[in-house]
Amino acid sequence: MTAPITPSFWSPALEGLEPYVPGEQPKTTEKLIKLNTNESPYPPSPRARAVLQEAGLAEKLRLYPDPESTELRKTIAAEFGLTADQVFVGNGSDEVLAHAFYSFFQRPEPLLYPDITYSFYPVYCQFYGIEPRTLPLREDFSITVEDYAIEGAGGVILPNPNAPTGRYLPLAEIEQLLKMHPERVVVIDEAYIDFGGDSAVKLIADYPNLLVIHTLSKSHALAGLRLGYAMGQAHLIEGLNRAKNSFNSYPIDGIAQRVATVAIADRSWLADNCGKVIATRERTCEELSKLGFEIVPSRANFIFAKPPKISAEALFQALRERNIIVRYFNKPRISEYLRISIGTDEEMDALIGACREVL
Image 1 (cartoon, one colour):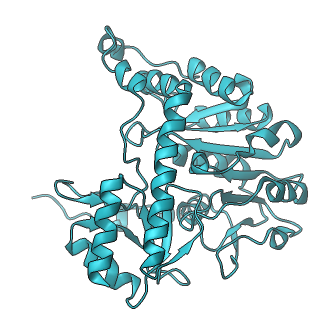
Image 2 (tube, rainbow, N blue to C red):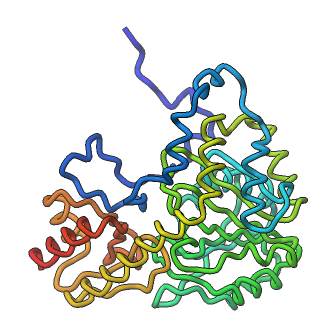
Image 3 (cartoon, rainbow, N blue to C red):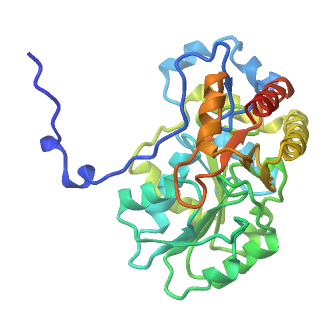
């Protein structure tokens, strides 16, 4: 008879962890409109899909992949006007973030980030023993950069656009942050930047403390591939490589490297895909506003909306009963809002129709 699993075998550090909780991933999506995890409503680049049909690809699986992801890093560097030694790749941007927290933020001073933001940040702080200091967003969920002018900070991290609000911080204010903390790393997590903002990558040459992190999960429609990357001056990338090579020298498999390299180079597909999502986002915001929703201005592939006449939780449940899944956060300040990922026009029409019916 198998003995019951008991925490008595766990280390003390593990017992106190509160893991990150991802959005619901139903076992089946048949007849389900899934608008809760910010996935792309469209398939990835045809060029990326064609890679999976290449002759001899399966035979290469017996070999270890390139531990440095050389061709992929060169392609990313070429897209952003960087050099390969200014690019780091990882198994999803979450892994890249984990290495960044380990490499740059394990200090006696607190790490600064917004009080409403990506919920993996406090998990990593707990995992690595980093003291966090959260700074409140304004009532309209925008960031007050002046609040970050704190002496003795161990670093700064924030998503831009922010999650789950979708609000965007202009580059001039990113520069303010960089100038406030010249001796500490400032990480700008740009998971959603392709949906309507200017990347901070253009500031890398002037700021040795800037690290910019991207993902292929959203705008490139490759969430199932698990690939993210960081860009910064070579000394920061070397720090990430030291952490990576002390943990896992082969985080990116050969197929993922090949698919990602082709996908990143397909600029026209990326522009078209993001353009469709942006157009649908703006139309959805307009229609929901007509129904009385309060919409937070979004530069992401989702919207953050407060419904009228009904609680967010009640609307969440009502939509779920109609086979539409959105994201509800039962947390202070945002418990009356829903985060709604942008789907196809047909999916968003179904959402709007369901909201109209419920209201």
